Image (cartoon, rainbow, N blue to C red; front, side, top):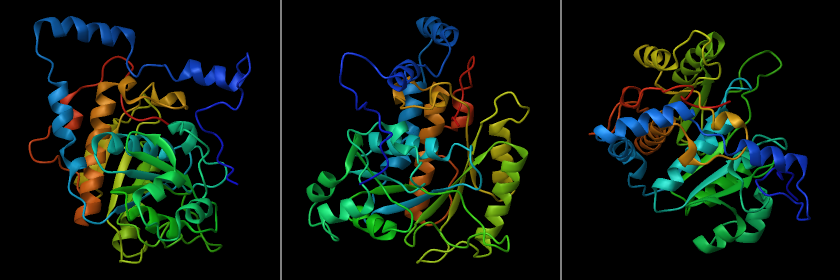
Length: 342
């Protein structure tokens, strides 16, 4: 059975809450924006029109692009603590909320993966073998597939893959019916000689998303991985997948501006988009899109749009879809709110 039991529901149904559930209940309600920022916006809204709903709609245009064959995205990282799992969960939830067809997400980070903790699925994440045994190695219908997966939000289903098992087979089966499948992959390792592992986390990846912290080391990693990918150092069955970088503000106030650094990476030939720090995401438990800071949600939607367009088109995309606003400039950070979490 799966060891991925860190879902959003407690196993305790008695007259008391476990300490863990008390912590989760307290943390999951943390808003992304401070009270002062929310109050200031309400006052401003009395005298000016609010552009945010239109900006969010325009930013979502790329997410809703037509998909003829299910797109598979590997979310990768070169070091822990960069926000890879949080970013995977955030993008899966955003894409699922904006599309009318099903979306899937797979926790392939190992037995201690925390994707379920961030998504709070309705049941324990089934493993790849459990899904394939229940749905069939080649699922006949969408219902056969979704019955075997764990519901994890609007149009979103989730599963887990144990190390050394059938991740490739699971992703192929899932993408027969799901428009987009995201895989939270383990941190990239090295061989005994120190050489990087020169393979995508699964053979059929249509795109790679590198989640890098906005630190000096993270920026170095982003450039190194882009060079490695450009030289054919990371391969999949169809060749070298396009690489997009999500630069995450994990140390707000540390002296690096995540928006400026992402633009510099993009200018230097490393396709990148920013995610500012967000108090709601930083709580470390399940999250609600409606509680995110506005700048976070706009940036996450822009990143999701760019990622889907990259996976469909086969080339990295960082520019907004036609008519969409620049997410970095459209909604400036307010108070303690900002982009992505740890």
